[in-house]
Length: 82
Image (cartoon, rainbow, N blue to C red):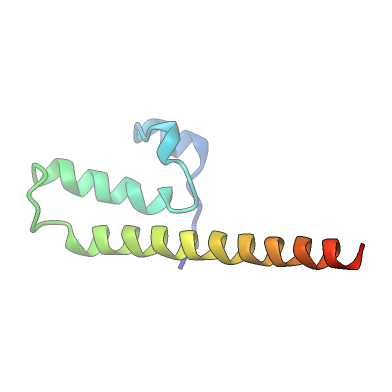
Protein backbone atom coordinates (compact mmCIF):
# COMPACT_ATOMS: atom_id res chain seq x y z
CA UNK A 1 0.00 0.00 0.00
CA UNK A 2 2.16 2.81 -1.18
CA UNK A 3 0.95 6.31 -0.60
CA UNK A 4 -1.28 7.71 -3.33
CA UNK A 5 0.44 11.07 -2.92
CA UNK A 6 4.21 11.23 -3.23
CA UNK A 7 5.74 14.11 -1.33
CA UNK A 8 7.72 16.62 -3.37
CA UNK A 9 11.32 17.47 -2.59
CA UNK A 10 10.19 20.89 -1.34
CA UNK A 11 7.71 19.31 1.09
CA UNK A 12 10.33 16.89 2.34
CA UNK A 13 12.88 19.64 2.78
CA UNK A 14 10.38 21.85 4.62
CA UNK A 15 9.49 18.93 6.92
CA UNK A 16 13.22 18.27 7.50
CA UNK A 17 12.98 14.64 6.43
CA UNK A 18 16.52 13.18 6.11
CA UNK A 19 17.52 12.06 2.61
CA UNK A 20 17.83 8.45 3.78
CA UNK A 21 14.10 8.41 4.69
CA UNK A 22 12.86 9.88 1.41
CA UNK A 23 11.10 7.05 -0.35
CA UNK A 24 7.62 6.15 -1.57
CA UNK A 25 6.30 6.28 1.99
CA UNK A 26 7.78 9.63 2.93
CA UNK A 27 4.44 11.39 2.41
CA UNK A 28 3.16 9.32 5.37
CA UNK A 29 6.24 10.12 7.43
CA UNK A 30 5.59 13.87 7.40
CA UNK A 31 2.27 13.74 9.33
CA UNK A 32 3.71 11.04 11.60
CA UNK A 33 6.64 13.25 12.58
CA UNK A 34 4.31 16.23 13.10
CA UNK A 35 2.15 14.12 15.41
CA UNK A 36 5.21 12.84 17.24
CA UNK A 37 6.49 16.37 17.88
CA UNK A 38 3.07 17.56 19.07
CA UNK A 39 2.72 14.65 21.52
CA UNK A 40 6.35 14.65 22.69
CA UNK A 41 6.98 11.19 21.18
CA UNK A 42 4.62 9.42 23.58
CA UNK A 43 4.56 5.80 22.40
CA UNK A 44 0.77 5.37 22.69
CA UNK A 45 0.08 8.43 20.57
CA UNK A 46 0.08 8.60 16.76
CA UNK A 47 -0.70 4.90 16.44
CA UNK A 48 -2.76 5.28 13.25
CA UNK A 49 -0.09 7.34 11.53
CA UNK A 50 2.67 4.97 12.62
CA UNK A 51 0.72 1.91 11.50
CA UNK A 52 0.04 3.46 8.08
CA UNK A 53 3.71 4.32 7.65
CA UNK A 54 4.96 0.90 8.77
CA UNK A 55 2.44 -0.87 6.53
CA UNK A 56 3.62 1.19 3.58
CA UNK A 57 7.26 0.32 4.38
CA UNK A 58 6.37 -3.40 4.62
CA UNK A 59 4.44 -3.36 1.34
CA UNK A 60 7.32 -1.57 -0.37
CA UNK A 61 9.80 -4.14 0.92
CA UNK A 62 7.60 -7.02 -0.28
CA UNK A 63 7.25 -5.37 -3.71
CA UNK A 64 11.04 -5.03 -4.00
CA UNK A 65 11.59 -8.64 -2.88
CA UNK A 66 9.11 -9.96 -5.47
CA UNK A 67 10.76 -7.89 -8.18
CA UNK A 68 14.19 -9.22 -7.20
CA UNK A 69 12.92 -12.82 -7.19
CA UNK A 70 11.54 -12.37 -10.69
CA UNK A 71 14.85 -10.91 -11.89
CA UNK A 72 16.83 -13.79 -10.38
CA UNK A 73 14.50 -16.35 -11.95
CA UNK A 74 14.71 -14.61 -15.31
CA UNK A 75 18.52 -14.56 -15.19
CA UNK A 76 18.63 -18.24 -14.22
CA UNK A 77 16.40 -19.10 -17.20
CA UNK A 78 18.60 -17.04 -19.51
CA UNK A 79 21.70 -18.91 -18.31
CA UNK A 80 19.95 -22.26 -18.81
CA UNK A 81 19.04 -21.39 -22.40
CA UNK A 82 22.57 -20.23 -23.23
